[in-house]
Length: 195
Image (cartoon, rainbow, N blue to C red; front, side, top):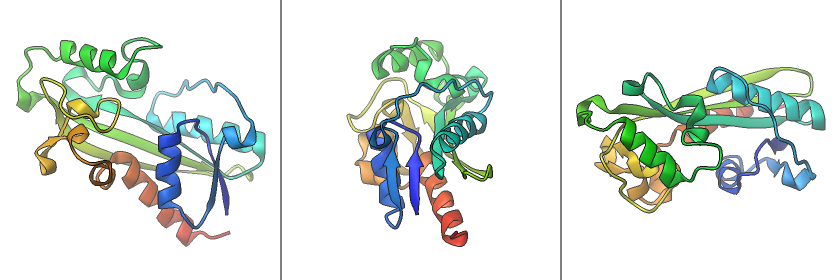
């Protein structure tokens, strides 16, 4: 089956290809599509659906899209769907992490509970859309640790590893990640619903 992934992110594309090797997976760049989709949903699921349905209608192909981010309980769920823009539109990972640490200044470790969340939507040209949602639970550290990963990984303490997600090899991290879990749900769905 040929699937379009509504992303320009090569890291995401590699991860999806690795989990769905039996499918032909292409990205927007492969189809010469350069589009800025307005993600104005209120949840990760809504934003994933907006992206998947927009590209599916445009290409008349089965399309996968994801929306993911960091949810910090002490901050009422922030940065949430605004994770990528948390410190401003063009901020770096370091700037976003610095802002998060500033917001949590003085908060004890046991109250720094957080989770990475990922919603994946698959949209069919016939208009049907399905979503898959997963999380990865952890806590926010007091300073960045580790050089692997990206985004908030250097601040995200994962108890099973007894360190941050940025301080373990990518393969280990990917086996517990929110995106990996959602992709496995998607793979199981595709395996059960071969068209």
